[in-house]
Image (cartoon, rainbow, N blue to C red; front, side, top):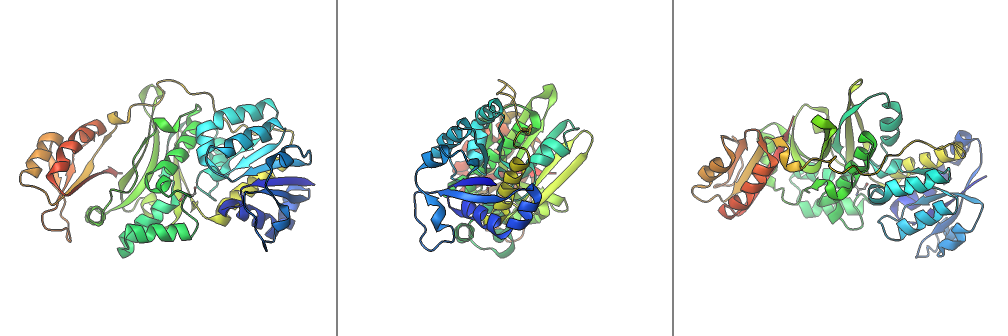
Length: 411
Ligand code: HSE
């Protein structure tokens, strides 16, 4: 019998219990063993819930129960989740998680504790929800030198941007829907400000490039500045607005890693990824390019990845998976200001002389031929310029309009 304990009975934790219950016989066939949810730790009670009898409030019961072999951490964050994960590993229990913040921040340390005790700390659900990506990247593509990883890594923002583009629904309305559907983080600012995608690209970079990359080193920009006019400009340029996490190897084996909204050329596979779906593209020196696509958020898709990790642990109690990376290498992450891109610059209610000022700061500009923009909106595309040039220009351009935004063109 494989006994598991679930920490946190929220969207994902309850999904894990549900998937194990619903698919018990095929899961047991897969692991050639019986499986049971012995405890569920939460601060709340759940009267009437089918798992009501498993709810406990004291982590030490799990920590001290030798029958619990696998702890599933779905609390989220880096507070008690960090403490309980360390304690579970130190108590000799394997840990499986969907907690990207914890993996991105403390993954290297937690994997180290697991390694010393011949345990597994697995986190397939931490990136891309239900999409298999951690194993393909570390195992199936293990024969490649990875040159780039990028993708749409946040379901909530993709849902918001898709509905804004398709139906003209407002940002606030679509965010509320994403929350209702269980896609958004408890604090949705982590989604819309890009922090969730930042943690995910940090984890993918750790694995793809082999050393710890602190999320603090990932230059991160969310989608809160995007307006209907930016979406109209993207359409006029035959592009779609998407929030991308990007990590790319450059000369000297150093990497660029950043999160930002982009205008992606229509016709590229990733531009067609809509709603809550995520997609991750991996470029390798043997495979060329592969794209993984699926549901990036939601109860059962995420639980699907968590339970598959539990099964993998159950099949490898005495054999560690080599899903790990080395400590941080100083100077490995390049200053994102050196990145070069073309940008679509939009200045609403542009003051007289705004176009000349923008050209003086950014060089040659091509006007965007776009129907539907408000009178007085200036929309132009720059040549290829460094991020630092745009960053220095924006504070000078902002006073010249009621709102100003610059989106990178991709492909
Ligand atoms: N809030 C996240 C998203 C959940 O929207 O993608 C999955 O990590």
